[in-house]
Structure formats: C-alpha cells, structure tokens
Image 1 (cartoon, rainbow, N blue to C red):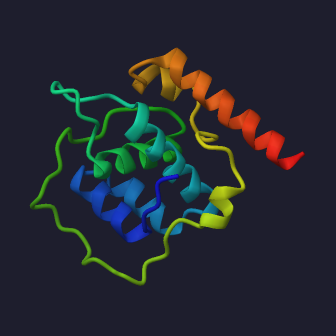
Image 2: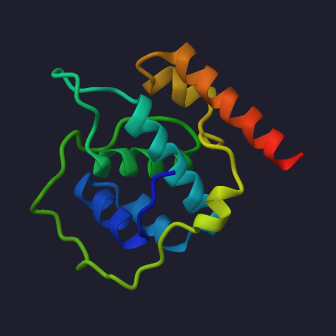
Length: 143
C-alpha cells in the first residue's frame, strides 16, 4: 500500500485547489486516511495513464484518492495540473503518516469501489479481478 503523511497530502490537495478536502485530511480518522492511501495505490497502478503511457504522478494519485474518499464518488480535481505557486504549509517531518498496521489488516484495494474502477481503471475487468484476488488472499490469511 502506498504510504504518505497527512502534511504531504494536504500540500498536494492545496496545489490542486482542493482546500475543503485538505482541511478534512487534517482531521479524518486513521481508517479514512488508510482508505485514501489504498485508493492512491490503486490509481498509481491501475489508474489513467498519460498520452505517453506513463502513470500519474503520485501527488495527483493521492489528491484524487483523498477527494474520492471525502466525496464518496470519483471526480476530477478542481485543477488538472498542480499550481506550484499555491500557498502550502511547509513540509512537516513530524506529520502523522499512514498507519501501516491498520493498512496491513486490510486487503489491497479494499477502499476502491466499482465506481472508481469504472471511472479510472485503464482495464476495468483486470482491476476488478486483482481486487477480488487480494480480498480472497486476505480472507485465506485470516482463516
């Protein structure tokens, strides 16, 4: 699972002009933040690609994931490209990060709904199959 800090996520969101979601990230629960990281991981591996075939920048994956978890549905970011002149908080190395113990207790792509797969996956059936396989592996490991 992708791991980041709340501070870096807030910075990414502000650069994409998503201040309400940035504010939410500062106070969301550990479970919600793990969901953000899970969806960001999915986007980095299965999400839209650029015209050259490259995957999205991680900052965009994290911002889109935070918007998805916050809003409860996929949507485009307020800005397609980062605003490098946006006012963002300084990097805070003490900012809480992804709760890796909580993340490991969930199957990969657990927070990715069919709506996200339909909206973003380059190969939706392949993405659904991977999500199902991770869920089955996780269930087998718990048995």
